[in-house]
Length: 386
Ligand code: SF4
Image (cartoon, rainbow, N blue to C red; front, top):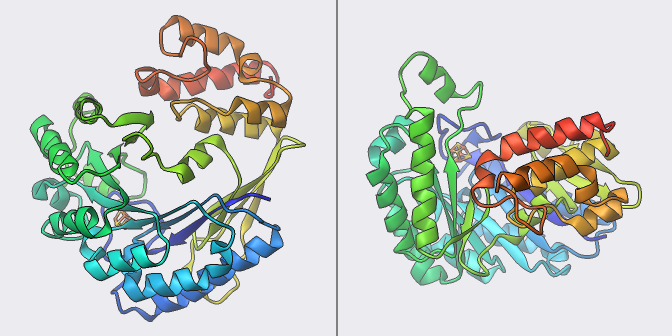
């Protein structure tokens, strides 16, 4: 079986107000970091054996803040993962935050087979960063980007965010220009989403934090998108832009819904049964203690044919190439054109769908949620599975 691997590193140097990932604030010398490396690597090896994975197209070490593991932690983790490395992953990405992406960390990534670093910058504007308690100091940002450009020298990505407090078009322009001056191959441009239960949601309720209006936030994101496109970065997903060849292969596998294993507290993995058009998703409890004690029993969810068709539409239309029709045909015995013909027709007429392909145009991607709603209504009308 072929399956990618996602390893969630659930530790951060602080807690950003808008964050809803499972992550616990720790110091870099917290002894749980080392124990976590051992437990996570062991779980990767066990799952590879259990599911007879003979090929790993990509690996992604995300978080949290994986760069908190430091140079020695990364070396230890990659050595412990050596049985997985024999399955020839062509892309191994790691997320890093500027304050912990020092020279030794970058060199350790380089020496241990990592092929791609994704740096969480969000913004160069100190006032906006402080307003949402973004972890790390602004001074660390240019240092980390210089290291990526000059010491790492390979494929790297930068995460930016629009819709932050105090942001305006000239701040977004400054963020993009500063970022592009380091020549990343890839930029993710996220629009801030206020999730229920976060510190930010509470601060907005009590007026301690004020965000741009929805219209302002949309125009800030569009301003960023246009600047990226003008600079030669093509949008290949709702929030992702790349120079030719700089796309993240691991994330493309999620949008196309191909097998992946999820490792670590809060992570989920999904394995597909192409013959029967269904899947099994396992989610590890978001609890570091049970994971370290070896008794984190994953919650199992079965995705039947109609769940899976919906999810393939939801994920597939995020991608500029649309869902993988060959895979849809293999799993469900139908093409996307026969599953949601009316929705495709209507959206093509509006000019939001490509003429000869079931894929949203760049402008159509702005209305992804309405497109998905229309598609689901049509699927439900036809009994949920076309
Ligand atoms: S650094 Fe990232 S994962 Fe950590 S608290 Fe901030 S947003 Fe969440």
